[in-house]
Amino acid sequence: MARVHLSPADLAALARQVTLAGGALEVAVRGHSMRPWIADGERVRLGPLDPAGPEPGEVLLVSLGGEARLHRYLGQAAGPRGPWLLVAGDAQPGPPERVEPGAVIARVLAVRRGARLLLQPRRLLRLALGRLLGLPSCVRRRF
Image (tube, rainbow, N blue to C red; front, side, top):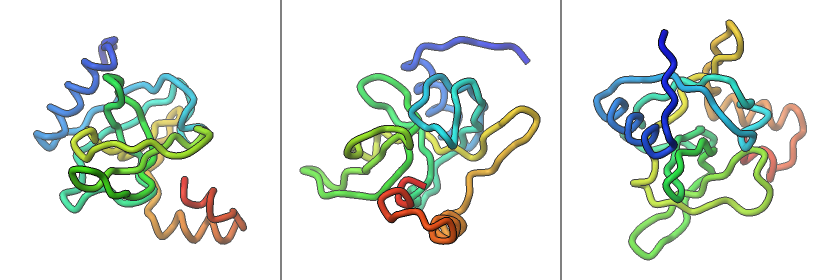
């Protein structure tokens, strides 16, 4: 497989084009905002958005300030032209960022960790594990 290095803007454009056509692509992650779920250098498989919209806890590829970033979807808030989506990196301190729904490009279907392909856990599993591990609600919301 050939490796291609794209600027964040070009990655966002390519991912939008591929996923709007119903396809998927795998990209290497650079950065630490999604640790511990996704580490620097790991690969993620990006796929189309669910027509019903994102589910809280899903990791999405969003366009923020011309950059493509992976952030976890936390919920919605009222905005001037409709709802804002609240997103944040798992390792990001502070409040979540607000983005318009059009800024969402794709969703993470799986993370490639070495030879293993880890599917993004479902919401109920995340909630159950969070409660089982005794995580406080502010932490559980990020997972």
